[in-house]
Length: 215
Image 1 (cartoon, rainbow, N blue to C red):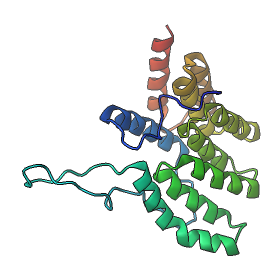
Image 2 (cartoon, rainbow, N blue to C red; image 1 turned 135 degrees about the horizontal axis):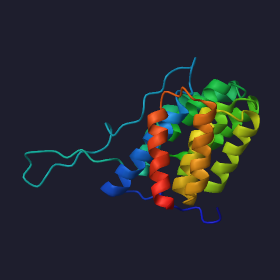
Image 3 (cartoon, rainbow, N blue to C red; image 1 turned 180 degrees about the horizontal axis):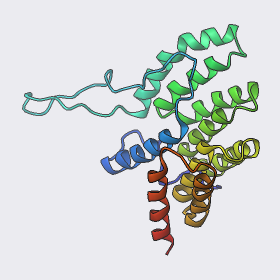
Image 4 (cartoon, rainbow, N blue to C red; image 1 turned 120 degrees about the horizontal axis):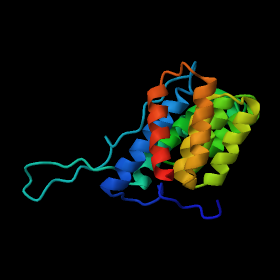
């Protein structure tokens, strides 16, 4: 992609409800595919708006919990990763540490930073398809659709039947490139190579929806 801003734009400091819910749906779908990348590593709980201001309504009787701005989310992530970055200076080849840092940045919607640390992790473990697939997710949400597709193709070059990569390839072709035919092809390959896929109904539903959009 030459234009690095799409419908999944994530860099506005305040999002409207439609943008938030739309992104949440795609995040959910990508999350279903990617799975838990930090197996064997320390779990990182998602960043929340618990530290964000909760302005009081005009009557002072109720409070409204607001989604934090990207600046506030980045500040929260920076606090979380600060001790990890100090550790990383002494352990620059610690793959799990790089993945953990990336996870915090991803949860804070700092996708460019997350992709950068996942790239370093991938260099340490070139055959790890899961890391490349997760990096593709971050590139996509940062607006780099072509970069995301390229990363997924690298994953599939290493592991042609990887379920996560095939799922995300279809989703990004569909949502990012408006390429319903390409998405359907990826998902059909996914079902062909994984006939007992636990999320088969979801994939079949998405194929049917994409077929409807392409007709």
